[in-house]
Length: 510
Image 1 (cartoon, rainbow, N blue to C red):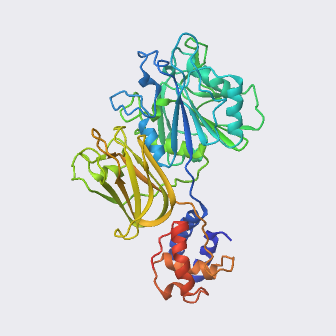
Image 2 (tube, one colour):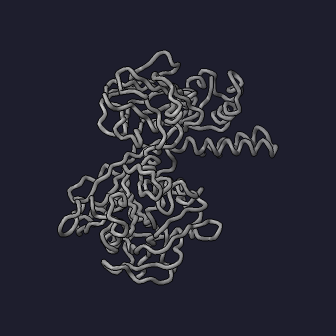
Image 3 (tube, rainbow, N blue to C red):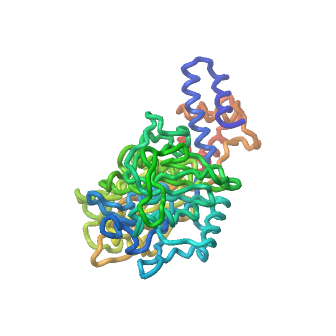
């Protein structure tokens, strides 16, 4: 019996009235979702970026055109992906970016995928790649997908030094899945209300009523081939004209067909594959044409990566209601609240050079089970803590050190043994004569654990025992009222309650 069924059975036995049943049904479904999902280890994402000088031929050749995940440009018309990167880090992903070789005489140098160990990665993003990849590299990416990995392809004319660079760099990989990358043509949004979604209930489109692109490169299903074991699906239609890839030159255009899509996905083996029609969807706010803040682009991005990594939900703890304090004087322009506002372009900062003993403390308001914290320096990439000590506390008075180390990059990502605590403190242990210590975003992630609702230890879940106890606890009853007449003793509930809170994410009070 699943948890929802078990608790619904309890509800029916307790009261037959429609109003109470509706309330019980909502509680049961929520708890069922809560306890049936486990937390995730950190999923690693690899971004393949074009080499310096290999992009932007339409607009002056700037490397800004290559959509770097460390590009924090907020100027009007920017092409940065730093805001996308922060969104993903906030969802628990660990990001790595590798650049292809710089522009030289002759062909650009591809990333050496053949020698690269891909096993640490859950997703590979071919973004502004524009080099030529050989058969061995293509074989390796196909094997990566079929063995459970996720791959995302995004093309754009300005990802290369001519019209053909970006689509031709993608095409050898896409051939294995029976897809075709087209060239830039058109500017449009995909709207649920207008019927633009072909599979409206797909997880990538849940909560997404509209997303858009500018200068788009639709993906086509190549009906002339049927790759073995590959399921190809258009999730959102293409609109207007589609420009076919004609080598180095601008291709010819024609009306879109039922084979063309703005979002096309494929499943092969145990892995997943997606083609998205435009880089602009994910630009920093104020980006060229559109950006990640327009329409539902942010939700779309979150869903897209969640689907590719085969997640069901984020492992990030909900920060609603959390507060923070810091040892350095308050600064109205850089307050502690900025580290919790979901905006990587605002920050808390010490307002003075880094010095040992400076602290930043989170009050999560309730006890949580967690084992990882991620801090981003944001646009101030050099303001990361030169050294850190992380401690946790149940009451804010007694502290336990859980992590200590030195930092070399703008993202401080620290994992440690499972903690069950309300407070988290980061103490600076390093110094930097010319840099503040900044936190643009801080996120805490729930610990993975074994979740069992078996309170009386009989290796069975019983609606009239455990189910009634849980139902009463969720309704806010206390003490013996929780267990009375259930067959579960007060001592068993007292023992089970902290384990449920620790491993299942519940918040039952004594």
